[in-house]
Every structure is written in C-alpha cells, then in structure tokens.
Amino acid sequence: MLRMCFLSLASLASTLAVQTIGPGAALEARQSQTVPAPTTTPAPTGVITTTKYITIDGQTDSHVTIPGQTIAIAIPTCVQTITPDANGYVPPGTCGAIWNYYPSFRAAVAFAALFAVLVTVHIWQAVAYKKRWCWVIIMAAIWEMMAMTFRSLSSKSQQSDGIFLVFQIFILLAPLWVNAFAYMTLGRMIYYFHPSRAILGIPAVAIAAVFVFLDIASFVIQLVGGGMANPSASPEKQQLGIHIYMGGIACQQLMIVIFVGLCIVFQRQMQRADVRRLFSSGWGQLLCALYWALAMITVRIIYRLVEFSGGVGDYGALKTEEVYFYVLEALPMFLALASFNAIHPGRVMTDSESDMPGLFTMTRTRIMLRRGKHLRLKEAGDCDGQSGWEMR
Image (cartoon, rainbow, N blue to C red; front, top):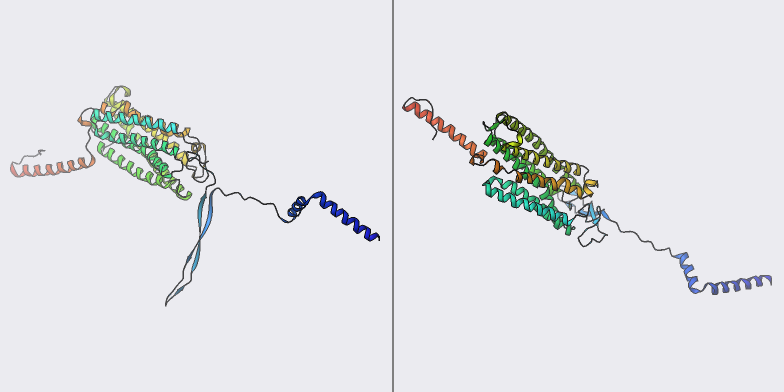
C-alpha cells in the first residue's frame, strides 16, 4: 500500500512538472542535451597555402619500368574577405593590397602638374639655346611627370597591378636620366672650358661616354629588379627583385661618388686658371647646379636603400607614411630638374664648341688623322724629301 502511494505521488509530480514547463520548454531542454550549439569558423584572410596533387603516369618498355608517382605542390592562395572601397583600397597586408597607405590623389596630381611645368620649360630652353643633347633632361622630366600621373590613376584604381607597375617603373628609373645628363654636361664643360679638354689625362669625350655607358648598365639592372618587384608576384620573387634593384642603385651611387671626384678635380684646375670666385663664373654656376642635382639624387637613393632594406614584409614608417615619399623622393627630383632650369647649360656654353663630338666620331677622326699623317709623310719622302705632314 505504501509503495503504491509513492508511485502515485511520483506520477502526479511528473504530470505537474510537464504542465509547468510546457511542451516548448521541454523540447528545448531535450535539444540542449542532445544537439551541441552551432559554431562559426572565421574565413581565412591573406595568403594561405593549398596543396595540389599532380599524378605522373608510369612508363614501361622492354628495358625499364618507371612506376607512376603523385607529386604534392604547395601553392600560395590569396583569399579576399574584405570588400574594397570605391577606389579599390584594402588594408595593408590583406589580400589584394597594393599600397601600404591610402595614396593621396590630389598630391599626385599636384606633382604631376609641377613636373609638367618643368617639361615645358626644358623644351623651351633646349629650343631657345639650340641644344639638341638636352633631350636627355627633357626625358627625365617626362618620366617624372608620367610617374606621378600613373600614381594618381593608381590611387583611384588600387586593385590594378598594371597601373601600379607602370608607376613603379617610371618613378624608380627616372633619376637615371638626370644622372646621364649630369655626365654629359660635365663632359661638355671640360671640352668647352678646360685648355687641354681632359681631366687626369682622360679626354672629355671618354669621360662622358664611359659614365653614360655605366648609367645604362645601372638602368638595365634597376629595370629588371623593378619589374620583378611587381606586387602581383610571389613574395620570394618580390624579394629577389628588391635585392636586384638595391644593387642597381648602389652602383648608381658609387658612380656618383666617383663622378663628384672628377668634378672636384675640374673645379680646382679651373680655379687655378680663373681667379674669379666659383659663383661669379659661368662654369662655376653650372658646376654648382651639377653638385646640387647629384646631392638631391643621393638623398633619394639613401631613402630608397633604407626603405627597401627591410624586405617585403617590413611595414616601417618609410613604407606606411606617404609624406616620406614626397619629401624624400618627389621633392628632391623636382629640385634636381629645376636646378638645370635655373642654370641651363645653354646659357653658359653658348657657341658651337659646346657641341662635343661623340666617342665614335672622335675615334674615327683620330684614325683618319693617323692614316692621313702616314700618307703625307710617305708622299713627302718620295717627292721632295721634306719632313712634316699636311692635314687636309
């Protein structure tokens, strides 16, 4: 009897509990006990590594049997989980990020306009002074202008690797045109002002030709490195391209140091013959413009060496703050180009003596003179016995 009472009370308590909780609550209680809560796995960002398997079929002939093999290749894959804004910007380090900061469209357009002014003035001065060889400095200004133009376009299309690569090639290689013009200018200054037309026994024509040739070699090295450092390339290839480019600008700076040494030798030898102060003579003013332009290029080279020294994954201040680019790259190159507007070689070297012949022309002329001297000596000995020679 007592047992039956306990069973009746237990049954009544169960019925009351079910009515109190309700069917929905009871269902939730059962689900909480049997089904775990759903979890969300965040999507990967940046570059991840996926594995691709390639199967190579085996080969069998009468001599040997090569079994089939399966090769696993690790492939870096970029997964984009952030929607770019209207200009294509995504934060640095994420998939599709080209810039390490948000580039200013207005600043790029402003400097493109400034370089366009220099292009116009350089063209006008080259025509006014009739200096055809000044096309080199015109090319330097055009390349700087094109670099800033493509930078402004890239600021509005920040997902375009092609536009960024064009900007990068122009901005990295434009200073080499200024270098070449400086080498050509000093060669013509030696040819025009120096009594012997030579420095340290080296003819002016040879000085200009050798340095321009080395400048072209540096141009090729930097072009290869700049092209390999394309943001769409793998990190390993970008790093190799950066190393090649840094080697190119290091060679460029070494040539500048040697060239400045020749400039100093020229200055001292000219000051012995010309008692006027450096700034009061035409050659001295042009030489100061050369010093200034090369100093600005040196500032820019040091900036690039420090910027690239950290490698691909470095996010230092020089790479993440745009102001350094304009203060240490764009502004120095603008001042270097403007120095040759302020003191143009055509204003200092006015007559045709500044049109120095090329190395090939000079070599051919010397060969012809030697042949002519030999023939005249032979004719003089055969005919009248006179010594000496006559140049026709």
